[in-house]
Image (cartoon, rainbow, N blue to C red; front, side, top):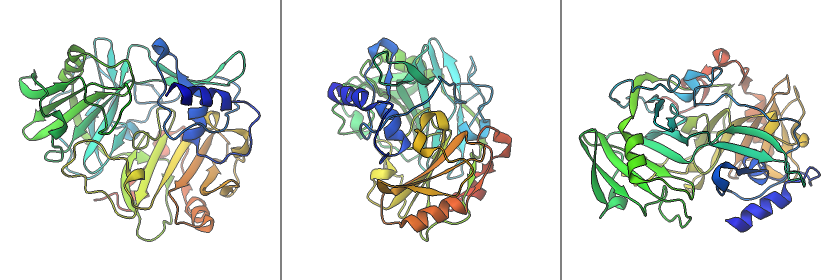
Length: 382
């Protein structure tokens, strides 16, 4: 991990070769966690540089006044739980209300799939900073960070088999399991470990797991879990309405970010479509649909501050990456946001451009103009 971080810092120079990777990889090249010298989750690896002029603060799910409740799922974090959580019946609907407990801020939902919804857990004032890679290592963009993920599964969707042998605990009088050695995802060998699973209702499980090396104590996990709050079911909204999609693709996840470990709090919106949707049943962990083995593509929306100068073509038709045939882009007319289409392969550049050219763009900075995902994306109704 440390080697990857050093490579990312070395690659994060203002003068960079033509971009061949998506915004996630660009950001990975120019960011690192500053709080307590925590190592960054590099994700897909180091990419080329981001050249931006100033730090920014994004609308996000931690209670920012410009964050769209529809986009992140529920009202801003409160100091008291809104009430017991009843999982929404719709395949794509939010139901987690953000809350605060002690030093922790749990966001409202930032991702939903047919099997679960997720929220960020922020400890204190964690920030995710992006640096320019120069000798001075200046911060060029910042967003509130997170160090754990809360996942609330649809009733019957989760099986706690990875917690076999874990310590039995109680959360609000209900059974739970704590394990210091369980990772967020199976097969993970990183230092990021520690997780709690508990039943928030009969036959319905939630988990909270560390995703950074610092980890969390049992007491901290229990404090976070005890505040889990529910609100009215909310339909996500998105700033991109797809007018055409390649035949056979259907929605598999939507939110303010992408399936972990893709995306992050620097995103504004994400929709991922797939040929064969994962079952989202019998789950022991969350699903990275980009690695599910079926053709997939994501339409992500990013502030221009998290892109490099090769993308800055405001108001023009869709255009594709000269070094990667699976990456195409379109900017909003005001040049403030980039829409990126990232395909796993199998789609021509003509098809990718058509997806973007036929899309209707709302103003990502004005959530009142966004579209309900049920109207914007095929397969969002089930």
